[in-house]
Amino acid sequence: MTESETQPQSRLVEVTLDQKSIGHNNADVAHEREVAIFDLLEENSFDLEGHDGGPYTLNLALAENRLVFHIADENHKPVEEVSLSLTPFRKLVKDYFLVCESYFEAIKTAPAARIEAIDMGRKGLHDEGSQLLKERLDGKINLDIATARRLFTLLCALHWKG
Image (cartoon, rainbow, N blue to C red):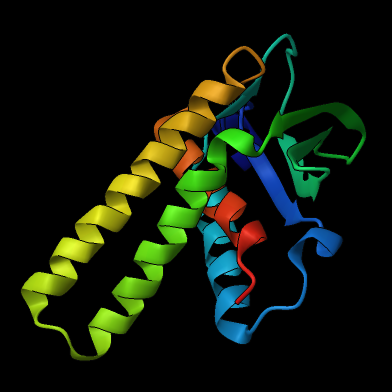
């Protein structure tokens, strides 16, 4: 059996971020994006509603206060474009970044209990963002929660200004 016969078809095989959306970041931010993409490609469930094909390639972009999913087949032939308003995510992403900054400051000097408490808050906001993304894509793209978590990470990476 070949690898393509054992891999599910409703999945992403390539993920890129629009270079104009990213802006200029430091090496740490670029590394976080690369890790998020690697993790997403390792395991995901991505099924385009009303389309009986896959696997897919995905380019994520920010345009006019929207998150745009440019979806193509594995040969990069465009299949569909899905866009979501960023307005429902705005406060959540802002809060997530604030908690992340607190976390990175805390790991330098704070006691373990304080770091753990901040990390729990960070994970809770990440879960909330993942669920919101999954809900907003309902009827357009079917995802499992693990895929939604990784896509929310990339949404945050597009917003991160370093």
